[in-house]
Amino acid sequence: MKIVLAADGSKYTKKALAFLVTHESMAGPADEIFVLNVQMAVPARVKRMLGAGEVLAYHRDEASKVLDPIKRFLDRHSLHYRSAWVVGSPADEIVRATHREGAQMLVMGTHGHGLLGRALMGSIAQRVIADCDIPVLLVK
Image (cartoon, rainbow, N blue to C red; front, side, top):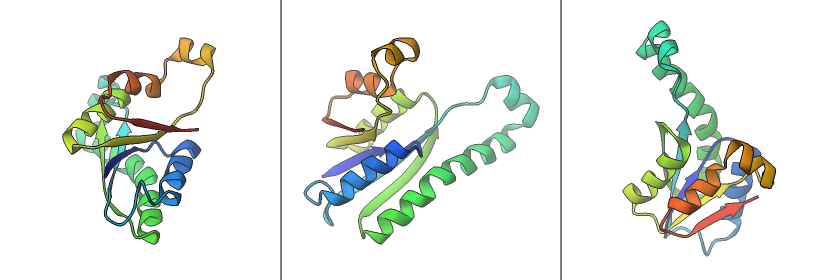
């Protein structure tokens, strides 16, 4: 099975990752995990001030902080994976990655905000579920 793991570096991502490695029927040696980190774009005025090179370095460093520990973890568990990072809207980029990768399942941690929290600030998980056409496993 090909699984996309949406990774934001939170404790919820770690829980989702732990769930995957403890359930070999989902992520065993024959399966592939595509780990995706989505970086929010910096405002255009900041990009103009700093320059594209600095902004790229910033995104690369931030993505590395999220992806490097996950890579080490997956290496220790001998799981087949690839990883990437993109800049954009998290929900849109996660759904786009599931299509691009031909994934059969999306796994992501959820912060588990209550009804009020979702109403006030929206929920990436909620948008992903609405827009994704494959099974989505939310780990809280």
